[in-house]
Length: 481
Image (cartoon, rainbow, N blue to C red; front, side):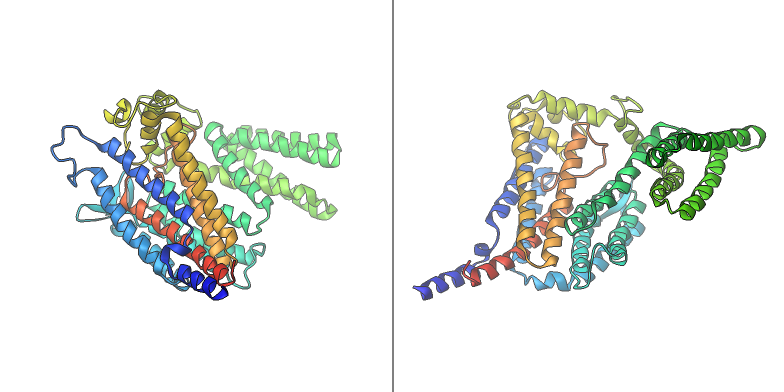
């Protein structure tokens, strides 16, 4: 009896699909096939003489699905140790491809981030994401690695910062921001939750720097931090006098010197900060150190962010301004989002039916087969279709997280969580921008948007995770689990 059970387990272990997580695999297949369906609807031309012509986007996507299927099979047959072994070479090649695209690549939609071969375009950033995820898993799986130790945090931060910097230089900031999803992995691996406050603070400063003048921001922060110090230590009149002296000095400098109001405030505040720092270390009131540090950071970041914002393309600046409500331009820069919202809203509960969408079929929605593919879902399949699509993504992301928890060693766990984090960010940003909750960034919907690079890259990302998890399944079966 025992012998028969062992033989059955061995047969199951030797079967390729007996080891993989079938739920994750089925979710992957369902999303890919639905994506092909939506691309067909978005690209179908009733006047075309040949439905199966490879000039159609859906036929090109079908070819990429076939290529991805072959690659998926190969990945599932590989020894899991190869992914750990080749993480460093893959990372070097990924960064090298990013540099090559920056120097010799083709510019598309303002981003010099593409290679073109025989009519097919390849975006190396998609594969750089895989390499970065593998490299990060390699670094964080080192025996001596501790995410709470500064030197180790710097190491893994550098792994992310290098490709991110090159992607930004390519003018493909949206793709670069996807690498920011790895911060969720840091949280899972034990990074203190307090580290996320500077991130939120940075986003806050960036948004308010678009709306208000720097002098207004710094005055408001000065008042807030003064109130904070008063609540911590009392002596209201003393703190109030200190605040008034700073403002008075700034006003005098602005009136009696060639300094602008902004520069005068910065000089007065910088002097005050030096005085405060001396006071803090002399009296050991270290609780005042945090607001001082945050204020200094604001002094550096706000002018820098304003400068970097001016370096963005005009259409990128306007997209961000529309998102924060500074301008209302539904006929020009905001046209895409406006038409997208109309398309999704017109679908109602059940949608207009397959190939019956008017906004998408008659090209009112630009990029309807790529970045705005979710509009096709909303218009033709309605709220229920959107619910099904979002549910499939949530299920796949949760499955990847479960696989990460199931894998005992850190390399597989970190990698699975990295894939889940990137997919989550892609889904949130892409769907968010189609319904007006996010600025338009040119981030595709994973496995659904038209594009061979994106499809192949996400297929590789997910299948490597499934292969790493299959090794755990092998170990569980060998133990009789």
